Length: 254
Length: 348
Figure 1 (cartoon, rainbow over the protein chains, first blue to last red):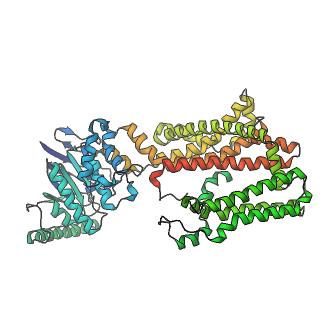
Figure 2 (figure 1 turned 60 degrees about the horizontal axis):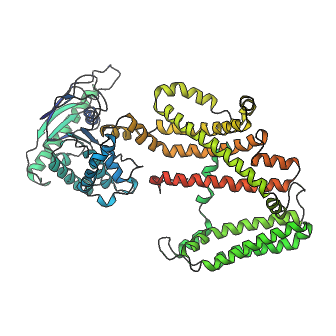
Figure 3 (figure 1 turned 45 degrees about the horizontal axis):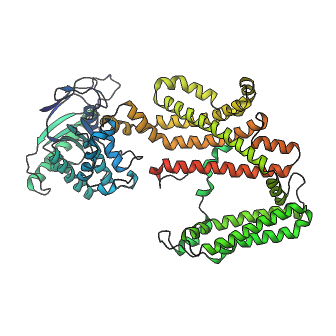
Protein backbone atom coordinates (compact mmCIF):
# COMPACT_ATOMS: atom_id res chain seq x y z
CA UNK A 1 0.00 0.00 0.00
CA UNK A 2 1.33 3.35 -0.86
CA UNK A 3 0.25 6.54 0.77
CA UNK A 4 0.54 9.37 -1.62
CA UNK A 5 -0.32 12.98 -1.19
CA UNK A 6 -0.37 15.58 -3.76
CA UNK A 7 -0.52 19.26 -3.02
CA UNK A 8 -0.71 21.88 -5.52
CA UNK A 9 -1.74 25.07 -4.18
CA UNK A 10 -4.00 27.54 -2.74
CA UNK A 11 -4.59 29.77 -5.72
CA UNK A 12 -5.38 32.83 -3.70
CA UNK A 13 -6.68 36.22 -4.57
CA UNK A 14 -3.99 38.84 -4.15
CA UNK A 15 -5.12 39.86 -0.67
CA UNK A 16 -4.42 36.46 0.86
CA UNK A 17 -1.06 35.19 1.93
CA UNK A 18 0.16 32.08 0.24
CA UNK A 19 0.48 29.68 3.11
CA UNK A 20 1.35 26.96 0.67
CA UNK A 21 2.33 27.55 -2.91
CA UNK A 22 2.41 24.37 -4.91
CA UNK A 23 3.59 21.54 -2.76
CA UNK A 24 3.79 18.00 -4.03
CA UNK A 25 4.75 15.21 -1.73
CA UNK A 26 4.24 11.51 -1.46
CA UNK A 27 4.97 9.34 1.53
CA UNK A 28 5.30 5.57 1.56
CA UNK A 29 3.39 3.49 4.09
CA UNK A 30 5.33 3.04 7.31
CA UNK A 31 7.69 5.89 6.58
CA UNK A 32 8.64 8.49 9.18
CA UNK A 33 9.02 11.83 7.45
CA UNK A 34 9.90 15.18 9.02
CA UNK A 35 8.89 18.60 7.80
CA UNK A 36 11.47 21.17 8.83
CA UNK A 37 11.55 24.87 8.14
CA UNK A 38 11.27 28.34 9.62
CA UNK A 39 7.90 29.48 10.92
CA UNK A 40 5.47 30.57 8.26
CA UNK A 41 6.66 27.98 5.78
CA UNK A 42 3.32 26.21 5.84
CA UNK A 43 4.30 23.04 7.70
CA UNK A 44 1.32 23.18 10.01
CA UNK A 45 -1.00 24.25 7.22
CA UNK A 46 0.09 21.20 5.27
CA UNK A 47 -0.55 18.99 8.27
CA UNK A 48 -4.03 20.43 8.79
CA UNK A 49 -4.78 19.82 5.12
CA UNK A 50 -3.72 16.20 5.40
CA UNK A 51 -5.77 15.82 8.58
CA UNK A 52 -8.74 17.14 6.63
CA UNK A 53 -9.35 19.99 9.06
CA UNK A 54 -8.87 22.54 6.28
CA UNK A 55 -9.35 22.12 2.58
CA UNK A 56 -6.95 23.39 -0.09
CA UNK A 57 -7.85 26.17 -2.54
CA UNK A 58 -6.67 23.90 -5.30
CA UNK A 59 -5.14 20.48 -5.64
CA UNK A 60 -5.90 17.12 -4.14
CA UNK A 61 -4.82 14.96 -1.26
CA UNK A 62 -4.96 11.20 -1.25
CA UNK A 63 -4.43 8.46 1.30
CA UNK A 64 -3.98 5.26 -0.68
CA UNK A 65 -6.86 5.38 -3.12
CA UNK A 66 -9.10 7.61 -1.03
CA UNK A 67 -9.30 11.37 -1.46
CA UNK A 68 -9.11 13.40 1.76
CA UNK A 69 -12.27 15.44 2.16
CA UNK A 70 -12.89 15.51 5.90
CA UNK A 71 -11.13 14.58 9.13
CA UNK A 72 -11.09 10.87 9.83
CA UNK A 73 -9.93 8.52 12.53
CA UNK A 74 -7.52 7.09 9.97
CA UNK A 75 -5.38 10.19 10.28
CA UNK A 76 -4.52 10.91 13.90
CA UNK A 77 -3.21 14.31 14.89
CA UNK A 78 -1.11 15.34 17.88
CA UNK A 79 -0.49 19.04 18.54
CA UNK A 80 2.27 20.80 20.42
CA UNK A 81 -0.27 21.47 23.17
CA UNK A 82 -1.51 17.98 24.13
CA UNK A 83 -5.09 19.34 24.08
CA UNK A 84 -6.28 16.64 26.42
CA UNK A 85 -9.90 17.08 27.38
CA UNK A 86 -9.44 18.52 30.88
CA UNK A 87 -12.81 17.20 32.09
CA UNK A 88 -11.83 13.58 31.45
CA UNK A 89 -9.39 11.40 33.36
CA UNK A 90 -6.34 10.02 31.60
CA UNK A 91 -8.13 6.76 30.92
CA UNK A 92 -11.25 8.45 29.56
CA UNK A 93 -9.13 10.69 27.38
CA UNK A 94 -7.51 7.67 25.82
CA UNK A 95 -10.91 6.01 25.43
CA UNK A 96 -12.43 9.02 23.71
CA UNK A 97 -11.29 7.88 20.28
CA UNK A 98 -13.27 4.66 20.73
CA UNK A 99 -16.25 6.52 22.17
CA UNK A 100 -16.26 8.88 19.21
CA UNK A 101 -16.59 5.94 16.84
CA UNK A 102 -19.03 4.04 19.07
CA UNK A 103 -16.58 1.17 19.56
CA UNK A 104 -15.93 1.44 23.28
CA UNK A 105 -17.82 -1.72 24.17
CA UNK A 106 -16.18 -3.79 21.50
CA UNK A 107 -12.63 -2.59 22.16
CA UNK A 108 -12.49 -1.70 25.82
CA UNK A 109 -9.68 -4.19 26.40
CA UNK A 110 -7.43 -2.19 24.09
CA UNK A 111 -7.49 0.79 26.43
CA UNK A 112 -5.34 -1.03 28.97
CA UNK A 113 -2.95 -2.06 26.25
CA UNK A 114 -2.46 1.53 25.15
CA UNK A 115 -2.09 2.78 28.71
CA UNK A 116 0.70 0.26 29.16
CA UNK A 117 2.17 1.17 25.80
CA UNK A 118 2.76 4.72 26.94
CA UNK A 119 3.50 3.67 30.54
CA UNK A 120 0.64 5.49 32.26
CA UNK A 121 -1.27 2.63 33.95
CA UNK A 122 -0.90 4.20 37.37
CA UNK A 123 -2.30 7.54 36.22
CA UNK A 124 -5.57 6.16 34.87
CA UNK A 125 -7.71 8.22 37.23
CA UNK A 126 -5.64 11.41 37.21
CA UNK A 127 -6.99 14.53 35.54
CA UNK A 128 -4.86 16.24 32.89
CA UNK A 129 -3.92 19.25 35.01
CA UNK A 130 -2.05 16.91 37.34
CA UNK A 131 0.21 15.64 34.56
CA UNK A 132 3.61 16.91 33.53
CA UNK A 133 4.10 18.07 29.94
CA UNK A 134 5.76 14.81 28.90
CA UNK A 135 3.08 12.63 30.46
CA UNK A 136 0.30 14.71 28.94
CA UNK A 137 1.89 14.32 25.52
CA UNK A 138 2.14 10.55 26.01
CA UNK A 139 -1.58 10.48 26.77
CA UNK A 140 -2.21 12.48 23.61
CA UNK A 141 -0.17 9.95 21.63
CA UNK A 142 -2.09 7.01 23.10
CA UNK A 143 -5.38 8.78 22.40
CA UNK A 144 -4.42 9.27 18.77
CA UNK A 145 -3.06 5.73 18.37
CA UNK A 146 -6.03 3.87 19.84
CA UNK A 147 -7.92 4.30 16.58
CA UNK A 148 -5.09 2.50 14.76
CA UNK A 149 -4.66 5.36 12.31
CA UNK A 150 -2.88 4.64 9.05
CA UNK A 151 -1.14 7.98 9.36
CA UNK A 152 -0.11 9.85 12.49
CA UNK A 153 0.40 13.57 12.03
CA UNK A 154 2.61 15.16 14.66
CA UNK A 155 2.59 18.96 14.80
CA UNK A 156 5.66 19.85 16.88
CA UNK A 157 4.53 17.36 19.51
CA UNK A 158 7.66 17.74 21.60
CA UNK A 159 8.13 21.47 21.06
CA UNK A 160 6.94 22.50 24.52
CA UNK A 161 9.06 20.00 26.46
CA UNK A 162 12.41 20.63 28.10
CA UNK A 163 15.50 19.29 26.34
CA UNK A 164 15.88 16.10 28.40
CA UNK A 165 12.23 15.10 28.40
CA UNK A 166 12.25 15.83 24.75
CA UNK A 167 15.08 13.42 23.95
CA UNK A 168 13.39 10.74 26.04
CA UNK A 169 10.11 11.31 24.21
CA UNK A 170 11.85 11.07 20.84
CA UNK A 171 12.85 7.54 21.73
CA UNK A 172 9.33 6.90 22.95
CA UNK A 173 7.80 8.02 19.66
CA UNK A 174 10.34 5.94 17.73
CA UNK A 175 9.45 2.93 19.85
CA UNK A 176 5.75 3.41 19.08
CA UNK A 177 6.54 3.86 15.40
CA UNK A 178 8.62 0.68 15.25
CA UNK A 179 6.10 -1.29 17.28
CA UNK A 180 3.06 -0.25 15.27
CA UNK A 181 4.39 0.52 11.83
CA UNK A 182 2.24 3.65 11.59
CA UNK A 183 3.18 6.12 8.92
CA UNK A 184 4.29 9.29 10.68
CA UNK A 185 4.61 12.83 9.45
CA UNK A 186 6.41 14.99 11.96
CA UNK A 187 6.52 18.76 11.88
CA UNK A 188 9.41 20.14 13.89
CA UNK A 189 11.62 23.19 14.41
CA UNK A 190 14.35 21.04 15.79
CA UNK A 191 16.88 19.87 13.22
CA UNK A 192 18.50 17.39 15.60
CA UNK A 193 15.09 15.85 16.26
CA UNK A 194 14.43 15.52 12.55
CA UNK A 195 17.77 13.84 11.86
CA UNK A 196 17.51 11.61 14.92
CA UNK A 197 14.06 10.35 14.08
CA UNK A 198 13.16 10.42 10.43
CA UNK A 199 13.71 8.39 7.28
CA UNK A 200 13.43 11.51 5.23
CA UNK A 201 13.57 15.22 5.99
CA UNK A 202 11.63 17.67 3.90
CA UNK A 203 12.96 21.18 4.14
CA UNK A 204 10.41 23.89 3.50
CA UNK A 205 10.78 27.61 2.89
CA UNK A 206 8.22 30.33 3.53
CA UNK A 207 6.27 32.86 1.45
CA UNK A 208 4.83 30.99 -0.26
CA UNK A 209 5.39 27.74 1.57
CA UNK A 210 7.08 25.22 -0.68
CA UNK A 211 9.48 22.30 -0.53
CA UNK A 212 13.08 23.41 -0.82
CA UNK A 213 14.87 20.08 -0.58
CA UNK A 214 14.32 16.50 0.48
CA UNK A 215 17.09 14.75 2.38
CA UNK A 216 17.16 10.99 2.89
CA UNK A 217 18.63 9.87 6.20
CA UNK A 218 20.16 6.45 5.84
CA UNK A 219 21.66 6.07 9.31
CA UNK A 220 21.11 2.94 11.39
CA UNK A 221 18.75 3.30 14.35
CA UNK A 222 19.33 3.93 17.22
CA UNK A 223 21.25 6.88 15.90
CA UNK A 224 24.21 8.50 17.58
CA UNK A 225 23.53 12.16 18.14
CA UNK A 226 27.25 12.89 18.10
CA UNK A 227 28.38 10.71 15.19
CA UNK A 228 30.20 12.44 12.36
CA UNK A 229 27.46 11.69 9.79
CA UNK A 230 24.86 13.10 12.13
CA UNK A 231 26.83 16.29 12.59
CA UNK A 232 27.51 16.58 8.88
CA UNK A 233 23.82 16.29 8.07
CA UNK A 234 23.10 18.86 10.74
CA UNK A 235 25.49 21.40 9.31
CA UNK A 236 24.19 20.72 5.78
CA UNK A 237 20.63 21.45 6.82
CA UNK A 238 21.60 24.51 8.84
CA UNK A 239 23.45 25.89 5.86
CA UNK A 240 20.53 25.13 3.62
CA UNK A 241 18.07 26.88 5.90
CA UNK A 242 20.41 29.80 6.40
CA UNK A 243 20.75 30.12 2.65
CA UNK A 244 17.01 29.82 2.25
CA UNK A 245 16.50 32.53 4.83
CA UNK A 246 18.75 34.95 2.91
CA UNK A 247 16.98 34.42 -0.38
CA UNK A 248 13.60 35.12 1.12
CA UNK A 249 14.91 38.30 2.67
CA UNK A 250 16.22 39.57 -0.63
CA UNK A 251 13.04 38.48 -2.31
CA UNK A 252 10.85 40.38 0.12
CA UNK A 253 13.01 43.52 0.02
CA UNK A 254 12.64 43.74 -3.75
CA UNK B 1 -27.87 43.01 39.52
CA UNK B 2 -26.43 42.99 43.01
CA UNK B 3 -27.82 39.58 43.67
CA UNK B 4 -26.10 38.30 40.58
CA UNK B 5 -22.77 38.91 42.21
CA UNK B 6 -23.61 36.87 45.27
CA UNK B 7 -22.07 33.58 44.23
CA UNK B 8 -18.72 35.24 43.74
CA UNK B 9 -18.62 36.19 47.38
CA UNK B 10 -18.92 32.70 48.78
CA UNK B 11 -18.27 33.21 52.46
CA UNK B 12 -17.01 29.66 52.93
CA UNK B 13 -14.22 30.20 50.45
CA UNK B 14 -12.95 33.27 52.24
CA UNK B 15 -9.69 32.58 54.01
CA UNK B 16 -10.31 32.72 57.73
CA UNK B 17 -7.57 34.91 59.13
CA UNK B 18 -7.82 33.22 62.50
CA UNK B 19 -6.76 29.95 60.89
CA UNK B 20 -3.26 31.14 60.12
CA UNK B 21 -1.58 30.58 63.50
CA UNK B 22 -2.96 27.07 63.45
CA UNK B 23 -1.44 26.31 60.07
CA UNK B 24 1.90 27.55 61.26
CA UNK B 25 1.80 25.30 64.29
CA UNK B 26 1.10 22.18 62.23
CA UNK B 27 0.93 22.01 58.43
CA UNK B 28 -2.33 20.71 56.97
CA UNK B 29 -0.55 17.67 55.58
CA UNK B 30 -0.05 15.97 58.94
CA UNK B 31 -2.68 13.54 60.10
CA UNK B 32 -2.62 14.71 63.69
CA UNK B 33 -4.87 17.72 63.96
CA UNK B 34 -3.38 20.73 65.70
CA UNK B 35 -4.27 21.22 69.30
CA UNK B 36 -6.86 23.91 69.73
CA UNK B 37 -5.48 26.94 71.47
CA UNK B 38 -7.31 28.07 74.58
CA UNK B 39 -8.49 31.26 72.91
CA UNK B 40 -10.44 29.29 70.31
CA UNK B 41 -11.62 26.72 72.79
CA UNK B 42 -13.16 29.38 74.99
CA UNK B 43 -14.43 31.72 72.27
CA UNK B 44 -17.90 30.26 71.78
CA UNK B 45 -18.78 29.37 75.39
CA UNK B 46 -17.46 32.74 76.52
CA UNK B 47 -19.49 34.60 73.90
CA UNK B 48 -22.61 32.64 74.85
CA UNK B 49 -22.05 33.32 78.55
CA UNK B 50 -21.58 37.04 77.91
CA UNK B 51 -24.74 37.04 75.80
CA UNK B 52 -26.70 35.43 78.65
CA UNK B 53 -25.22 37.85 81.17
CA UNK B 54 -26.05 40.87 79.05
CA UNK B 55 -29.50 39.60 78.40
CA UNK B 56 -30.18 39.03 82.10
CA UNK B 57 -28.99 42.57 82.74
CA UNK B 58 -31.24 44.19 80.10
CA UNK B 59 -34.24 41.90 80.17
CA UNK B 60 -36.35 44.00 82.47
CA UNK B 61 -37.46 45.77 79.29
CA UNK B 62 -38.67 42.59 77.64
CA UNK B 63 -41.91 40.73 78.31
CA UNK B 64 -41.42 37.58 80.36
CA UNK B 65 -42.02 34.75 77.80
CA UNK B 66 -39.60 36.33 75.31
CA UNK B 67 -36.67 36.25 77.62
CA UNK B 68 -37.27 32.69 78.83
CA UNK B 69 -36.96 31.14 75.38
CA UNK B 70 -33.97 33.33 74.53
CA UNK B 71 -32.15 32.34 77.70
CA UNK B 72 -32.92 28.69 77.00
CA UNK B 73 -31.59 29.13 73.47
CA UNK B 74 -28.36 30.77 74.61
CA UNK B 75 -28.02 28.20 77.34
CA UNK B 76 -28.36 25.50 74.70
CA UNK B 77 -25.61 27.09 72.65
CA UNK B 78 -23.40 27.31 75.72
CA UNK B 79 -24.07 23.69 76.63
CA UNK B 80 -23.44 22.48 73.09
CA UNK B 81 -20.18 24.44 72.90
CA UNK B 82 -18.95 22.92 76.15
CA UNK B 83 -19.99 19.46 74.99
CA UNK B 84 -18.18 19.87 71.66
CA UNK B 85 -15.11 21.12 73.49
CA UNK B 86 -15.07 17.83 75.33
CA UNK B 87 -15.75 15.65 72.29
CA UNK B 88 -13.05 17.33 70.20
CA UNK B 89 -10.42 15.84 72.48
CA UNK B 90 -11.22 12.50 70.83
CA UNK B 91 -12.11 13.54 67.28
CA UNK B 92 -9.60 14.97 64.86
CA UNK B 93 -12.16 15.89 62.23
CA UNK B 94 -14.26 17.78 64.74
CA UNK B 95 -11.19 19.59 66.05
CA UNK B 96 -10.24 20.73 62.56
CA UNK B 97 -13.79 21.90 61.93
CA UNK B 98 -13.86 23.76 65.22
CA UNK B 99 -10.51 25.41 64.63
CA UNK B 100 -12.04 26.79 61.47
CA UNK B 101 -15.52 27.66 62.72
CA UNK B 102 -15.14 28.76 66.35
CA UNK B 103 -14.04 32.36 65.71
CA UNK B 104 -16.85 33.05 63.24
CA UNK B 105 -19.52 31.45 65.46
CA UNK B 106 -18.29 33.45 68.43
CA UNK B 107 -18.49 36.59 66.30
CA UNK B 108 -22.09 35.75 65.36
CA UNK B 109 -23.03 35.40 69.02
CA UNK B 110 -21.21 38.67 69.63
CA UNK B 111 -23.51 40.33 67.09
CA UNK B 112 -26.50 38.92 68.97
CA UNK B 113 -25.55 40.57 72.23
CA UNK B 114 -24.66 43.84 70.55
CA UNK B 115 -28.14 43.74 69.02
CA UNK B 116 -29.59 42.93 72.44
CA UNK B 117 -27.81 45.89 74.02
CA UNK B 118 -28.94 48.28 71.30
CA UNK B 119 -32.60 47.21 71.37
CA UNK B 120 -33.54 45.92 74.83
CA UNK B 121 -30.72 47.64 76.67
CA UNK B 122 -30.69 51.26 75.56
CA UNK B 123 -33.72 51.36 73.24
CA UNK B 124 -31.57 53.13 70.67
CA UNK B 125 -33.77 52.00 67.76
CA UNK B 126 -37.46 52.83 67.41
CA UNK B 127 -40.00 50.16 68.27
CA UNK B 128 -41.79 48.24 66.90
CA UNK B 129 -39.54 48.32 63.84
CA UNK B 130 -36.46 46.94 65.58
CA UNK B 131 -37.41 44.21 68.05
CA UNK B 132 -34.92 42.57 70.38
CA UNK B 133 -33.40 39.19 69.46
CA UNK B 134 -35.42 37.62 72.25
CA UNK B 135 -38.70 38.73 70.77
CA UNK B 136 -37.68 37.62 67.27
CA UNK B 137 -36.88 34.17 68.63
CA UNK B 138 -40.16 34.08 70.53
CA UNK B 139 -42.12 34.91 67.38
CA UNK B 140 -40.17 32.38 65.39
CA UNK B 141 -41.19 29.71 67.87
CA UNK B 142 -44.80 30.87 68.20
CA UNK B 143 -45.45 31.10 64.50
CA UNK B 144 -43.35 28.17 63.36
CA UNK B 145 -46.25 26.36 61.68
CA UNK B 146 -47.08 29.22 59.36
CA UNK B 147 -43.39 29.93 58.77
CA UNK B 148 -42.75 26.31 57.92
CA UNK B 149 -45.70 26.28 55.57
CA UNK B 150 -44.52 29.48 53.90
CA UNK B 151 -41.01 28.12 53.50
CA UNK B 152 -42.42 24.97 51.94
CA UNK B 153 -44.47 26.97 49.43
CA UNK B 154 -41.47 29.12 48.61
CA UNK B 155 -39.33 26.04 48.11
CA UNK B 156 -41.82 24.42 45.73
CA UNK B 157 -42.22 27.62 43.75
CA UNK B 158 -38.49 28.35 43.66
CA UNK B 159 -37.44 24.85 42.66
CA UNK B 160 -40.05 24.40 39.94
CA UNK B 161 -39.28 27.82 38.47
CA UNK B 162 -35.53 27.41 38.80
CA UNK B 163 -35.34 23.93 37.33
CA UNK B 164 -37.64 24.88 34.46
CA UNK B 165 -35.71 28.07 33.69
CA UNK B 166 -32.30 26.45 34.01
CA UNK B 167 -33.29 23.54 31.77
CA UNK B 168 -34.71 25.75 29.05
CA UNK B 169 -31.79 28.15 29.48
CA UNK B 170 -29.18 25.43 28.99
CA UNK B 171 -30.99 24.09 25.92
CA UNK B 172 -31.45 27.49 24.27
CA UNK B 173 -27.90 28.43 25.20
CA UNK B 174 -26.52 25.31 23.54
CA UNK B 175 -28.60 25.88 20.41
CA UNK B 176 -27.66 29.54 20.08
CA UNK B 177 -24.03 28.81 20.88
CA UNK B 178 -23.66 25.95 18.43
CA UNK B 179 -25.97 26.42 15.45
CA UNK B 180 -25.43 29.44 13.24
CA UNK B 181 -29.10 29.65 12.26
CA UNK B 182 -30.22 29.52 15.89
CA UNK B 183 -27.75 32.26 16.67
CA UNK B 184 -29.01 34.50 13.88
CA UNK B 185 -32.62 34.29 15.02
CA UNK B 186 -32.11 33.73 18.72
CA UNK B 187 -29.46 36.32 19.57
CA UNK B 188 -31.64 39.40 18.92
CA UNK B 189 -34.44 37.93 21.04
CA UNK B 190 -31.97 37.17 23.79
CA UNK B 191 -30.42 40.65 23.64
CA UNK B 192 -33.72 42.53 23.58
CA UNK B 193 -36.01 40.45 25.81
CA UNK B 194 -33.37 39.07 28.16
CA UNK B 195 -32.25 42.21 30.01
CA UNK B 196 -35.82 43.14 31.07
CA UNK B 197 -35.98 42.23 34.77
CA UNK B 198 -38.40 39.35 35.24
CA UNK B 199 -40.29 41.35 37.86
CA UNK B 200 -41.23 43.92 35.20
CA UNK B 201 -43.44 41.26 33.60
CA UNK B 202 -45.58 40.85 36.72
CA UNK B 203 -48.55 42.93 35.53
CA UNK B 204 -48.65 41.06 32.24
CA UNK B 205 -48.07 37.66 33.87
CA UNK B 206 -51.00 38.16 36.21
CA UNK B 207 -53.30 38.86 33.27
CA UNK B 208 -52.10 35.98 31.10
CA UNK B 209 -52.03 33.18 33.63
CA UNK B 210 -55.23 31.72 35.10
CA UNK B 211 -53.56 30.95 38.41
CA UNK B 212 -51.09 33.14 40.27
CA UNK B 213 -48.84 30.19 41.02
CA UNK B 214 -48.26 29.51 37.32
CA UNK B 215 -47.35 33.08 36.56
CA UNK B 216 -44.97 33.06 39.53
CA UNK B 217 -43.27 29.88 38.32
CA UNK B 218 -43.02 31.42 34.86
CA UNK B 219 -41.47 34.59 36.24
CA UNK B 220 -38.87 32.75 38.28
CA UNK B 221 -38.11 30.59 35.25
CA UNK B 222 -37.71 33.69 33.09
CA UNK B 223 -35.39 35.27 35.65
CA UNK B 224 -33.18 32.16 35.60
CA UNK B 225 -33.43 31.62 31.88
CA UNK B 226 -31.64 34.76 30.77
CA UNK B 227 -28.32 34.48 32.63
CA UNK B 228 -28.17 30.71 32.10
CA UNK B 229 -28.78 31.07 28.35
CA UNK B 230 -26.27 33.88 28.01
CA UNK B 231 -23.47 32.11 29.85
CA UNK B 232 -24.16 28.71 28.28
CA UNK B 233 -24.16 30.30 24.85
CA UNK B 234 -20.83 32.01 25.39
CA UNK B 235 -19.33 28.86 26.89
CA UNK B 236 -20.39 26.76 23.91
CA UNK B 237 -19.35 29.34 21.36
CA UNK B 238 -15.94 29.74 23.01
CA UNK B 239 -15.08 26.05 23.08
CA UNK B 240 -11.39 25.84 22.24
CA UNK B 241 -11.18 25.11 18.52
CA UNK B 242 -8.31 22.71 19.09
CA UNK B 243 -10.50 20.44 21.27
CA UNK B 244 -12.94 20.22 18.40
CA UNK B 245 -10.10 19.61 15.92
CA UNK B 246 -8.71 16.81 18.05
CA UNK B 247 -12.15 15.24 18.40
CA UNK B 248 -12.68 15.39 14.65
CA UNK B 249 -9.40 13.62 13.97
CA UNK B 250 -10.51 10.98 16.47
CA UNK B 251 -13.45 10.30 14.20
CA UNK B 252 -16.07 12.32 16.11
CA UNK B 253 -19.42 13.15 14.57
CA UNK B 254 -21.48 16.24 15.49
CA UNK B 255 -23.33 14.64 18.45
CA UNK B 256 -19.97 13.80 20.05
CA UNK B 257 -18.69 17.30 19.36
CA UNK B 258 -21.73 18.87 21.05
CA UNK B 259 -22.34 16.50 23.95
CA UNK B 260 -18.84 15.32 24.74
CA UNK B 261 -16.71 18.29 23.83
CA UNK B 262 -18.62 21.58 23.68
CA UNK B 263 -20.94 21.00 26.64
CA UNK B 264 -18.29 19.71 29.07
CA UNK B 265 -16.00 22.53 27.96
CA UNK B 266 -18.81 25.02 28.64
CA UNK B 267 -19.66 23.55 32.06
CA UNK B 268 -17.71 26.12 34.11
CA UNK B 269 -19.56 28.88 32.26
CA UNK B 270 -22.90 27.13 32.64
CA UNK B 271 -22.36 27.06 36.39
CA UNK B 272 -21.63 30.77 36.51
CA UNK B 273 -24.95 31.23 34.73
CA UNK B 274 -26.68 28.92 37.20
CA UNK B 275 -25.34 30.92 40.15
CA UNK B 276 -26.35 34.23 38.61
CA UNK B 277 -29.75 32.74 37.86
CA UNK B 278 -30.10 31.59 41.46
CA UNK B 279 -29.53 35.15 42.67
CA UNK B 280 -32.14 36.60 40.33
CA UNK B 281 -34.54 33.77 41.12
CA UNK B 282 -34.49 34.60 44.87
CA UNK B 283 -35.29 38.20 44.07
CA UNK B 284 -38.07 37.32 41.65
CA UNK B 285 -39.52 34.73 44.02
CA UNK B 286 -39.89 37.19 46.89
CA UNK B 287 -41.34 39.93 44.71
CA UNK B 288 -43.76 37.54 43.01
CA UNK B 289 -44.92 36.25 46.39
CA UNK B 290 -45.32 39.75 47.75
CA UNK B 291 -47.54 41.04 44.96
CA UNK B 292 -49.16 37.97 43.40
CA UNK B 293 -49.10 34.59 45.09
CA UNK B 294 -50.72 34.55 48.52
CA UNK B 295 -48.27 32.20 50.16
CA UNK B 296 -44.58 31.79 50.74
CA UNK B 297 -41.98 33.75 52.68
CA UNK B 298 -42.36 36.87 50.55
CA UNK B 299 -46.06 36.90 51.29
CA UNK B 300 -45.39 36.25 54.99
CA UNK B 301 -43.08 39.25 55.27
CA UNK B 302 -45.57 41.64 53.73
CA UNK B 303 -48.43 40.12 55.74
CA UNK B 304 -46.53 40.50 59.02
CA UNK B 305 -45.62 44.03 58.07
CA UNK B 306 -49.30 44.78 57.47
CA UNK B 307 -49.97 43.88 61.10
CA UNK B 308 -46.90 45.81 62.22
CA UNK B 309 -45.48 42.58 63.64
CA UNK B 310 -41.89 43.40 62.93
CA UNK B 311 -40.56 40.61 65.10
CA UNK B 312 -42.25 38.25 62.64
CA UNK B 313 -40.70 40.10 59.72
CA UNK B 314 -37.29 39.54 61.27
CA UNK B 315 -38.11 35.93 62.00
CA UNK B 316 -38.99 35.43 58.33
CA UNK B 317 -35.74 37.12 57.32
CA UNK B 318 -33.80 34.72 59.52
CA UNK B 319 -35.57 31.78 57.87
CA UNK B 320 -34.96 33.25 54.43
CA UNK B 321 -31.25 33.63 55.12
CA UNK B 322 -31.01 30.01 56.20
CA UNK B 323 -33.18 28.84 53.30
CA UNK B 324 -31.37 30.69 50.53
CA UNK B 325 -27.89 30.02 51.82
CA UNK B 326 -28.70 26.33 52.08
CA UNK B 327 -29.80 26.24 48.46
CA UNK B 328 -26.72 28.21 47.44
CA UNK B 329 -24.52 25.75 49.33
CA UNK B 330 -26.22 22.82 47.61
CA UNK B 331 -25.49 24.38 44.23
CA UNK B 332 -21.85 24.82 45.26
CA UNK B 333 -21.73 21.16 46.23
CA UNK B 334 -23.16 20.19 42.87
CA UNK B 335 -20.62 22.43 41.15
CA UNK B 336 -17.76 20.80 43.05
CA UNK B 337 -19.02 17.41 41.96
CA UNK B 338 -19.53 18.19 38.32
CA UNK B 339 -16.40 20.29 37.96
CA UNK B 340 -14.21 17.97 39.97
CA UNK B 341 -11.71 18.09 37.09
CA UNK B 342 -11.10 21.75 37.83
CA UNK B 343 -10.20 21.07 41.44
CA UNK B 344 -7.31 23.24 42.44
CA UNK B 345 -7.72 25.53 39.47
CA UNK B 346 -10.97 27.33 40.29
CA UNK B 347 -10.99 30.16 42.74
CA UNK B 348 -14.69 30.91 43.19
